[in-house]
Length: 477
Ligand SMILES: Cc1ncc(COP(=O)(O)O)c(C=O)c1O
Image (cartoon, rainbow, N blue to C red; front, top):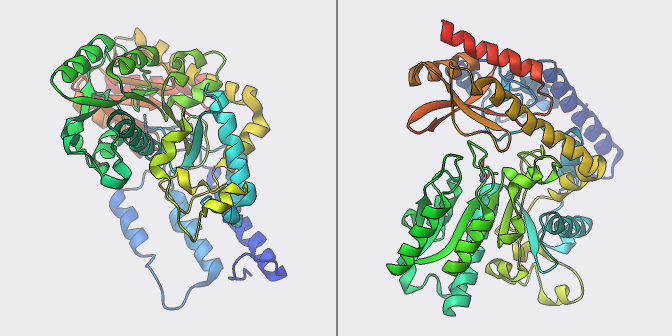
């Protein structure tokens, strides 16, 4: 019988902790016996079932009954990310040791804002950031912080760069005075297929979507460098002010990789900052076979690294790395109750000064746990396998007249369509969903396309062959 106190040093609390977490582990373990990604339940039926669970009863029903509800009503219709039939999004299964690390994180409930809320957590995050700077080619002049995900890492990067740019170029203190009078001229350049966190960031920073210039892409779905240079230089001549270029290192749909070297040269010519949104592609740094596809990421002024995508860690887990630690000035503010300057002088590091968040999770533990356990070689195997799977599937469809292809995969995604039109492709996705096979749908050159986002290293060539045949069956129906 579980005891509903907080986790504490009492025996009853510890025993309730063990039995309660055991119950949850058992429910998950039983759900694992189901290999399909989804039950296929109709959304209206699921909504009714969930609505029947109620909200806040006057008297609680106790742990056993609550666990039973989770087991019977919620667990069966959870999306099973571990299924090799789950491939619509950049949404991965989780490495087992990082699930265990999540339990540790929640149990200690550390917070990363000040040293006194997480001494070992603060020191470990700092140490992991130091390691990550080295992994992506930055020096000790850089810095970094864990964030809630790629969107927050991107937003933080753009906020930092806007702050730095205005200060260095115009001596304007945006932290104090807000945006300058000429703010309508500021421009952020990014691929036409980059993640929408660029638009959201521009809006939240008070610049609006109008400040985002979409650069056209080439045949490989990368920013067209000649066009990019022409557009940016023309904008400068017209009196606009480029403050940042975003290179997407792994676009959300295609996994295409912008040319960081060429974009660095354009950024230098334009006198602006360069961000690398490597939310997707950052994992490929571990691959001895494919890692060099990323280019030299240290040329960027900042890098978004998501651990809850290719690195297979539970949500949430991301980091923003900056080449120059001064970039975090945008977030630095002292509060008497939290991050006193005298503490920092005495070696108590308060990480709140690098983040948008105040209370913040100890996600660095997940990275430490899996890096320590698997080493670079372990990740090399995983990441090379998933990129190899994408190459294999592409090799099957590339010359098959039943298929329309987009660009060849650079990472682990393949975007394609069955010949037969948009309606057929939409039907294929819905039909597969009802069979528990979840694939993606997007658009390319005005056509509805299907998408395999292959993050699961358990997927093998024989299952890829089966999926390929299943798709071909639709063309014969
Ligand atoms: C290229 C890219 N950047 C940023 C993001 C946003 O990441 P998150 O969902 O972790 O906020 C995504 C999400 O898929 C992405 O594909």
